Length: 282
Ligand code: AG3
Image 1: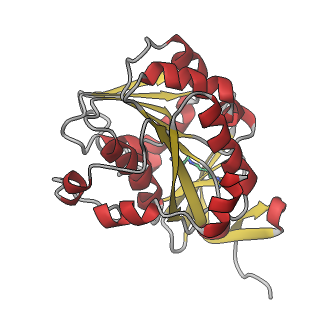
Image 2 (image 1 turned 90 degrees about the horizontal axis):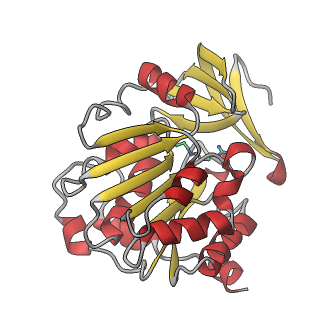
């Protein structure tokens, strides 16, 4: 079979598969000091952001990922007020976090200002809450920021990064997890995007093991579909004192709209497929 017209193809060489989106045209192409960022207009998924050849988000399906990264962690913490997002430069996670009325301050620590600048231009719908007085932007190294953070000064850390290669590699390592544990104190909740359960089972295993080794008493997974990431299936990993329970009643009575997240979706996302359970046990 051949594909007609121009397509963006993300190859997943680790699984000999690829994901394609039919394009209408290219809107931006920028090489920052950290990475290669491209923005396209697709035929059916709206705008597409690509970093170093990998799909970061499309206008059509990013709500699933961003809602799961933000609301699963925030409804796990008993009273989240101070939130730090590491990465997340497109501001999609930030927008979801700011929907929580109890949140007092959200700091987004993104290494690459180009991502946020291009998101503001091409994905204004993700950046619509950027002027919220509770939001603060810092462009710099997330690892250094966490290392310097006051112990116990953060309620929730959300790591919304690229894959564990290049600039994001250190965000999937035990020294970083240890520093997060310190910044969070006893009650804090950590969540990290942790790749495809099907294609990257080994990474998922390393993330859970690394977090436990760094002193987090409990870890959990939250699985969700993500149509435009390799395999169409993605995961977040939670860590804290007890992350298998959440404020279910509050989630069911939430005062803001979501398109994917519900209390029931949250409960279901915590259920672990047998092969993931087995991988994490060994
Ligand atoms: N999150 C990107 C997740 C990694 C996607 N990986 C891939 N396509 N190979 C950052 C963007 C959403 N805020």
